[in-house]
Length: 598
Image (cartoon, rainbow, N blue to C red):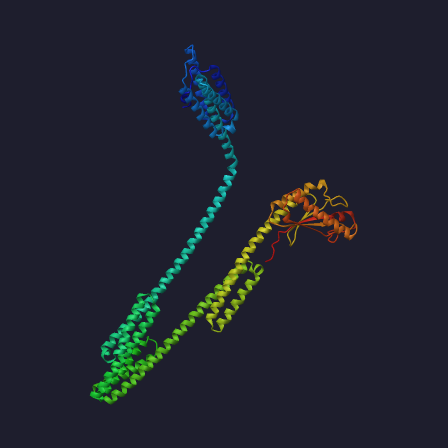
């Protein structure tokens, strides 16, 4: 290690007296470093120097004459010394151990000068000394920096601990944010699931309507509608294709509408085809055919009535129509065609009546169900709005956000009136408005409550700290905390602050510095001695001098402070005796902690 490096640069013979000096320096260096624990590098250097000195001594004793050092060897020694000096400079030795660094530079300069003069032996000797001094400077600089870093680590330990606490708080906040995000994602997923379910219901309705239309078209084909009612039949087929295309595009409303149109066109085609068949029958068979046609019409009406009948509408009328149709078939079998035609017409009328009544009741039921759904939704929304208003009141909204809370209550009252009048859509809209206002009121109340809580904590802290100052009275007002300082802060008849009062002013200043977010008003007051005008003037001067003392001596920012003098106009005790007058001669420091109303 270092011994090998130094050994390569040893001149022969070496100046033994100098090596002895180097050993003494190394020992002294070791003695200085004991208190801070010498580094491994410094230990290596000392060992290397001692070994080098020993070998040099042996070399010196071995011969009677110094060997000749050639120019190349001397040049290499100078180069090695220069590299060691550069290393020492990079380690900061020039600033940390300037004496050792300067010695190395001096030896290097002498070695360079000797080399230029052709004195190789002398150049090698000085280069060796420069090299050793540079290595000593490097080791000492490294040790100094290590000690300095150890001190810095001790100093920043409290800061590291504080930052760790801050990191823990930040991590907790991040975990809270992640939990909230997961909750929001779950809510969104629920909404998406509901949307998928609604979509599936709409698709099922559309598929059912298409199936009904296909059945109607099949029935029209059986009635020979492609030949007897081509236009209506083609429209039915076209509408059916449009319904299927809309279904493929997930346009369920359009699919249902097109399917219903296809069903109507198919029914019309069937009716038209059967009507034409009836006309043919009338022409060819007359009476029988008329009867058959009447039966056909009745059967068609019965089919329509049966489709419209859901099991609870117009049952009696439908049974009557079935009975008439059965009598019509019996009359047709017995060839009583006139009777059969008359009965068939009656059955047709009854079936049409069933269809009309059923459709009317279906529409009425649908309207009633829609009305009931709207009513239920409105009532549910009003219940939620009432709960929201109650929560806002619990949060103190009546005092802290009264206007917004009253808006919420008024909107809810209007919603109830609209619901009583049967206008549930308007009721739902007003309920939503009420809910929105109540949420806003609760949010405002919670924010104001938190702000008032913090202000109260700060005011209590100020009062506790100020209450410890001698000859000070502290009270809380609607403006904030008032620190009243009596005890004749000023010389009688003067506006100059007494020197024995400055300690108390410093304590007040420390309190103001601790709460830098609040403005401060300094009020001057006097007793009734003297004229009103003179008392007003001196109270203003005292308040202003108090302010300037806080700015100039205690370094309170001027923009936080303002002053005012009230003279004798605001006494807190009687001016009849000296004790009362002494209480009236005071300075009030008003810390404006009270929140400003928006």
